[in-house]
Length: 402
Image (cartoon, rainbow, N blue to C red; front, side):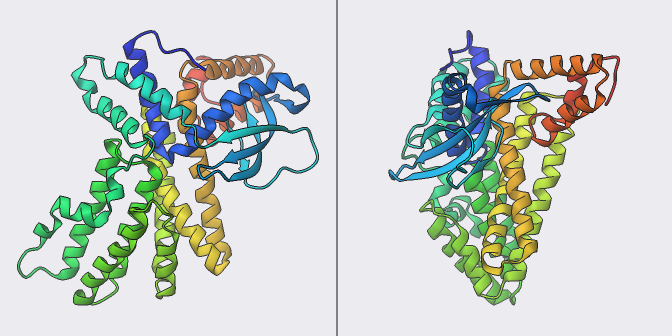
């Protein structure tokens, strides 16, 4: 769909943003978005009855009936108002009967985003600059772990990671068993984050691992020292059954609730959401708008929001408590926006959309329409498409903040 960049450095710039987007969350999200983008570009001009204009932002949207073809051959139906910048919300139900709908098929056996990254990577890694070595390794690792049938290192399980890290060596004579648990918990969580920094694990898998580690450690600390260290080992063993198989970790959370640890699970949901929101705010308060830096900040944010969403969804399914449902809704909304923001940094690398918004803002200022200016600025920020500092580039220099 797109030509390759003209030189190796441009390939590197695009590959970094695409790698962050691809493994920022679950790679399937970006592959789906890219297929929607491909089909949007073909479908939207062909059916004007299905196209409407967002007059505030100058962006067309398409009413779509989505059919997701899963890797097991099953077809799931949904619908969405998909904009040209791929923002919008997906619904996992058949579309309402009213309105003009264009059907778009999303074949989840295809991996167009991963294929694009794999094509960019060799040239991106040819750039001879020792300062880029770690980032080039990140790109290469993102290609490797998203290959069909690939197993990221973390899929080997937490117990394997404990052995590789030789965490038994943390034990010292006379050390309280719960101090051992705390030390191993900290080192395990750090190792997950190290793999994340290297591009060796996607955001969804990292979130599952963090849930398992934090849940096991917190449960262990509710018991006496001898019992606690046994609980720590058993909880990690339970988690490994899901992590190594690549299965949803919700049953592990359900088991903890059944075993009387609902309070701990609630604390984890709240803690993960608090951390995710703090990291989101850090991204939004980036001093100057740099696509790579903003993408990295969103990349770091996603695992915590996904973890909060997973834990709260499990709680809500069992308790039907409005507080749990609310945490799930908030975490889900921000997690989706992080995915949108990551995808947008790559999609608008050439600044076409950014420049269009600048022109619309300039016209609105000329018309004295400050309300429209504020709406455009806030819409892009609340959608996590750009940090607040991007206002300096969107607004005429003489106007200052709006």
